[in-house]
Amino acid sequence: MDTMHTKAIVFEGPNRIDLRNLAPLRCESDEILVATIYSCVSPGTEMRVLSGVLPHDRVKFPFIPGYAFIGQVLEVGDSVAGWRKGDLCSARNSVGSPEVDSLWGGHVSHHRLTVTGDARPVHLPEGCDPWDYVLTEVGAISWRGVTIAEPDSRDVAVVIGQGMIGALAARFLQILGARVIVVDLLESRLERSRRWGLEVMNGKEHGIEDRIREITAGGADIVVEASSSLSGVKLARDILRSNDESTFRTEYRGGNSWERRIPRLVFLATYTQELSQIPGQLVHTERALIAAPKDRTYADRLAVVRQIRLGNILTDDFVSEATPAELAPVAYHGLTETPNQVDGVVFCWSENTCKKSMETQVPV
Image (cartoon, rainbow, N blue to C red; front, top):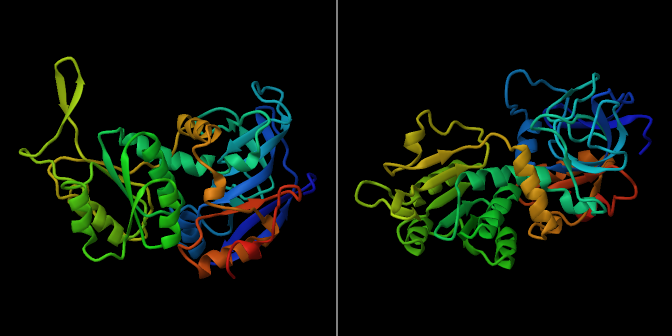
């Protein structure tokens, strides 16, 4: 795309999408200017805000959505150190355009980025294929939730929901040594988990709570709820193992030190309905860790870059082809018409990186 102007995907109102041409961006002395190569849609979050379920009162239509993108540095501000023209990066939360508000603002052809703070861009390996790193920002959300639970080979973990966030969480739990069981309603997602060597269960199975408690010997040590459904929350509560005075498990810390190792429930989804005003009501057990990570850190993003570089996370497991940004209205229509059947969409912003048309990727 022409670097003399900025093109953006704009949510104009509930279920209304447009592409706008915006004025060129000016790189300030403490910023870098980045040309977008790919931007990644996480369907759960973006489809909710597109429908009008906005995260807080100060966000109003119209706005530029998208919180994950890969880009290449075009300009480096005079006071910036550590970045060069041509560097590749994974980034989020750009400065934005004065012409239209941003809700994360990732789906735009060019970005002004500050290079300090926890939301600063992450360098990608020199000479890498940018496609391989499309899931860096989304993956960091899953990594954050998983590592809060501190999994290891002693743990049995159940992940409810195998969309992009849940599937990445399951993969990271596996990499960190836990025994992993996944639950989803869609066989296509369960088949991907089978290819990874995970145990799978269809959420439609009768008596699934009893079945999981049976195969986990009384309940899971870690449950990750990533389905965004209240039925998923109920299942998560019911399959977390007990931890009252008579049944707590212990953890060996070395020497003569034994510590209690509590069950852990991690929420990695957003919900359109209130779950509970009292966190303790979300579990039956007496003592448990309940975590709901709100964001990912710079360290989380670096960790995911490393996992991708090692070959542990593959973009093609989730999205096989990029979609031209000009087809964004078609892409979002497809996501609306086939909810929960597409793990994600990746928009490409250059003719060199757009592989095939949207029609081959999302049913319309």
